[in-house]
Image (cartoon, rainbow, N blue to C red; front, side):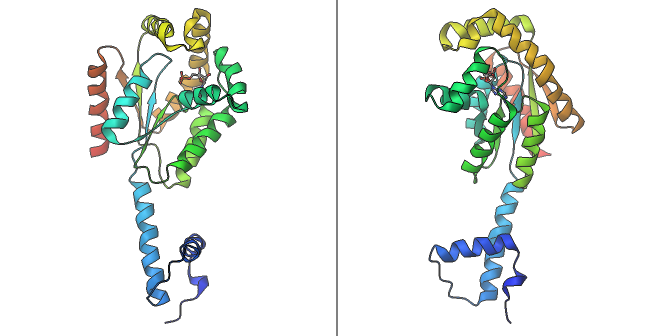
Length: 243
Ligand code: AMP
């Protein structure tokens, strides 16, 4: 049987070229070689299809960071926090970090294209991840659309959005307390905290409706002990994983 290059889809051709470039010399007939590569390719696609991608949603101070740390450990997910990534850029004094600091210090959102670019690079860096936990992203409907597109390119999607619900009085107390030790400029000033809530209500709350329409949204009570909240999140995740 003659195996022609035109029979092979482009993406597999590229993969085949890489394998050949890396010095792999098959000791089998080309048609079997192609079949073998096809199996590898399909397996890779299947892995993407079975990824579990979670968004931990909620206003500033709702406990996303604390719960994310516990959840990534429990479920082996890659934690992608745009707030953490931005603070890392700031502490490394990169041009992106210095630009972002102007927005963060005023309680405003960093422009969509900046955070979407960061998420895109992070997804690329973790090609073999079994799933991602998005914390503090998406924060606008435009970011939610972009995330859907980026995940679709990887043949996967958001599995579930869990939203931590906490009253505004409790949030303010938590943020002011955190500000005493976190060293975060945006947690120390009550006026900036209020600005962050306004931005949340105007720009981020509509993201919840976006995922409600997609039947992926679930509210979780965000008050109580860290372990109680963790147990509620686990229950919701385990149900989603079982369905
Ligand atoms: P966080 O640590 O998630 O509370 O984020 C701290 C600050 O970083 C926010 O108040 C925003 O200024 C900025 N930031 C974090 N994530 C995003 C995002 N997805 N879109 C825009 N700005 C963000």
